[in-house]
Length: 225
Length: 225
Image 1 (cartoon, rainbow over the protein chains, first blue to last red):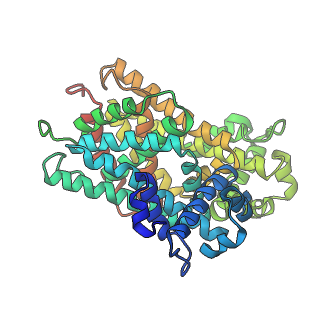
Image 2 (image 1 turned 180 degrees about the horizontal axis):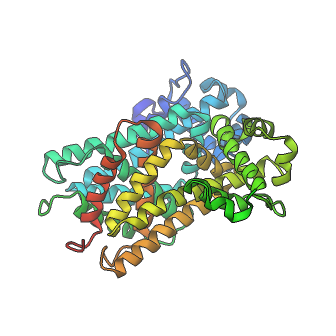
Image 3 (image 1 turned 60 degrees about the vertical axis):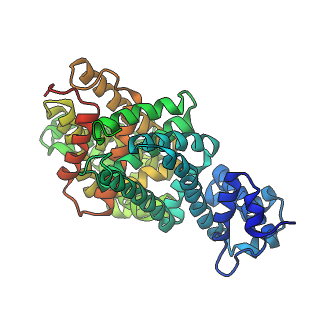
């Protein structure tokens, strides 16, 4: 059986991304050392997303997670010290999953306004397949505020940095900064809630088109496309 | 002693607004019938905001609320059936307080883009004085989802309606609709979190200026001011 990164290279793209993230997810000193261990850890995180997504942190349990994952209780404690630790790992894992899902769409775009459009469309599609992400990240505000803050700070900083690079390329206005980054993050989070989690009554591309048209006029540089 | 609305008319504006809201806040069949009763109910809601804002719903207690409010436990149960009921009333009260705080600033503006600017500036200022509002409304997602959804649905609908009226007046583009309303709500919520709750490192008017400039180009109609 293939081990390590060789096994990931043959996996679908999403699985490779999350398998990589999973290596850092275990509690201190408990990182998996084999491909099989990484798969078990991945199964535990996916089961934790289901368990906490359905029941919330307080009602969710380690035994519920291991039952969903089809692993023994001992396997859980091979990788995590506690329910708190797996929740903390899950929040960071979901944050990384969102980032890894939308980044290729953003990078493939030829112009920053198109990149923001692609990022939002990709985010809404991701949310429709992972509706539990809102409940889990929102509950982190109470269960694990450090991970909650890290998620939004790192997301806003990523947007700010890509807007600054686009301003250097002359694609968005030179006065675009942190306020715009937090504004775009807020738009995306609430549009994901409305059109991803709540209802499938709109085409994600149409929502992204409306926002991109507003941003093209609002922060774009005319004729830079 | 003056009773009923006569007493409210002599109160500062904010107190009158919240006293009105408080009349609807009590549990079914427990609405206060006197000005004194309304003041007690108001004191209980303000104490509940402190208690739940500091401790969260699960750690917060009815006795903590009555201690902060300086009222007897019996007074609490004169107006509310339970801790769940006062939390539910508090979420709706805070939603109404935000609305009543920003609405005059929005109505006073001469043009819709200026109205959105004034609304955001006013919201950030409100949040700085009521930092507990995020924690309380965010926790409602778990404790009282109906009130949580009602808060965002009614806020988005209010924005959509005022944008539609502005489109009729030729102040914003005719294609502005629900997507823009949710986008603006999301921007305001995250900018309130960043510049209201987290840090006082920016002038609310400067944040609102940056957003208004983006909106003026993004959804405004040129030369309609």
